[in-house]
Length: 369
Image (cartoon, rainbow, N blue to C red; front, top):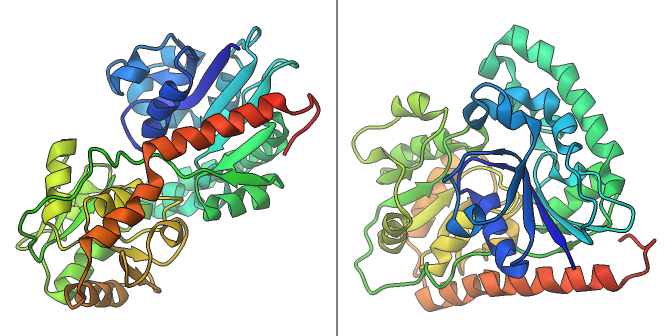
């Protein structure tokens, strides 16, 4: 059986690329197709693949400015020639799910989320305060068109897998399709507890982008009088620097080993924004430490209130500050937290994907879920 893996773009090793890395183990002989690839930016397992890139690759500074070519994504993803493949597996948060597959092939989509900025988070990415009033107004009809295209191509997938209950609801809402939940892989063999002292410091590990709401967590830490370390980089860093100082610090990018040490020694890891799933909270729990998270979306799948963390009902500075205080005054059982995280292991993910692919290939040719 010839298999093709489709991924939106390969420009770094984020959550979607960690999913793709595990898929490379499930389908060791699969070829890989992506709109843009920055060589050396992902794992060795991904880089070893035969990688086919779209025409976007050859546009100016595509590896850095690929999001500027958003209106060209539909054209780019539809250019791949997949004749000769029996199974197509896409990992999609943008356009990968809309790839055109040959009539005899089956398409399994592992949906990270329907396109956020086209459907319900336009302002977070392209609102007037982000890109300016004129550019925001110009982009609004473009993104509305992209949403229509996204919905119109939903039928190209024979079976959807969702990363969380929240994403399953989004798939039903925007694509009018059912999905099966297979939680993303977390490296529970690398992220493990250790007998080390725990400090009262809190931790954020995040891309510094608007919807992550790192700003609120930094202000909440000051309100609660606790220390906070923010690991990560992104376009919001300059603005967040104004909120840093004293016990609230931005430390930029860190290696996986350094992040693991921070998980192990921090009072708790904070997830202030609304995440489709959120691998970081599970990594922290795999290290035996609790999480403070907004009680929405993916956190409802990964955090057990009072057992593995604190869920905050309101996205506000005061509510987050109360969450910090509650965490400090609660007695946490590291072994229970670790056991919960093991539900999200890499092997569990791989088994779920393999089972879904086998079921899809064994189904009648005209069956879709």
